Structure formats: structure tokens, C-alpha cells
Length: 143
Image (cartoon, rainbow, N blue to C red; front, side):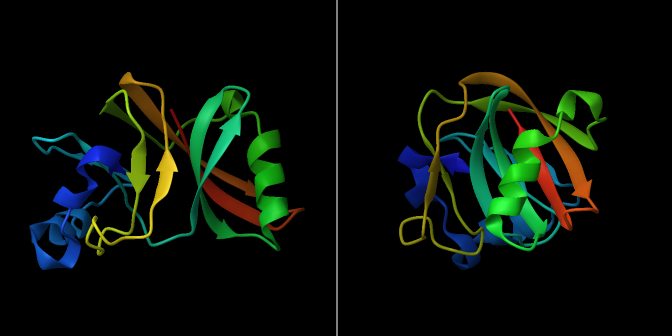
């Protein structure tokens, strides 16, 4: 996730950007760039989406679910305030839209999912959510 205005600065596998992103050991890590910090979603490649919950925007990452509707339902209904985050990270969000891209892609040619998180220093909390009855597991990154 990087500032949309600077997405062409990300060169993916054609530069050191991809190697740096792959070196991330946690579920979230920030890479500092002169044009804006990059939020790397670590762990493993997963389908990622934007979800607007009553408590604020978040990114959801699909581990498994019977279908998208089931995953979204669980992500919306889970009271994350009752959960302990598995990870937290301070991240400086610029007041502009962000681009979510595959880290291996060239930012100028990548398929982009746009997201406008709240601007400023944000504590991004990561939650592992699992609902065995609905056969759903996901990561939720709340801003």
C-alpha cells in the first residue's frame, strides 16, 4: 500500500523494492521512501479487499471462506475490540488515496485497488479472525 501519487516510483521485481517487501517477516511492516511510506502486507500472498466497518476502514485478507459474502459478513460482525491484536504498527498516512498493488508489479502498470485511509500517524492493528462454524478465516488490518 503506497501513496497513489507515487505509485510509479515502485518498480517491483525490476528493482530492490520487491526484495525488500519479500524480506518482511511480520504481517505488517513499513518501508520508508522519500515520496511516502509503504505499508507491506506480509505473511503470504492473499486476496485483499477494503472494508468500511462502523469503527473505521480496514483491509481484509482472505485466508479461507466458502464465498466472499461469508467472509465479509464475519469481518463486519466480529467485535475486534474484544480481541487482542496479533500485531500493531505505527504508520504515517498522507492525506491522499493509496494504491494497493502486488509488490512484484511495476507500480505504473499494476492493477490497483484504491483506498483512502484516515490521514496522520495511525496505529494499524492486525487481527486474526476465525469462525469455525462459518468456515472463515481472515486477517483484518484496522486503521
